[in-house]
Image (cartoon, rainbow, N blue to C red; front, side, top):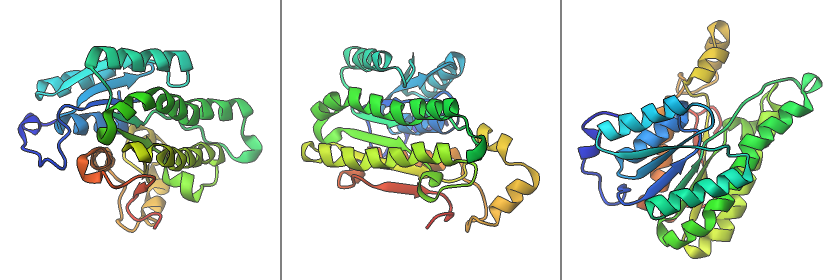
Length: 262
């Protein structure tokens, strides 16, 4: 987060000052980028982590050094009692909740013939159950926020188009899209919007490890923009959906994929 970011005069339509935002899985990668960008806009951040406490605290330190506000909060998004306690703690200590970004996710790849049921359970627990539990725990507080209430769920291009060797992961991310659209209908009458962001291939430590050499070169030929994305580009899309500028957008899946799926 650049030092001048907190001083930037954001227009009212993009300003998130006074909002409290929870970003799950925010200690690294896309989640970290989202936390930083929301803080730049003025939101007070709750940086969730499952195991990376030191990394989460480093994210908070970077935000605070630039003039923002952030706290680290460890909880397992797949544990219903832990999620309920965490959201309650956020509301009690920070005075409310306005924005929930369900970013926490894991990926386990395998062809169907070699896929293990226990791996599928792991993916469902974090990617889909975690999104469900956090949304459920946050909903009544977001309703109190009324027209400021936002839920933004991270899905994937794979959840829309599928991919060989990722049937388990794709199923969970497709489930997130279904959850997003249904919850958007439930909450719309109260002014709370629910949207999803579907990244394509983004340059994170996970993709760097999986995409090397010829595999990376082959992938780039399939992306019309000719490159993988940056985590900050996903974060900017999330920040837009969290902002007043997106108040009439709900149930939408915003693709950030360089044209990989059009």
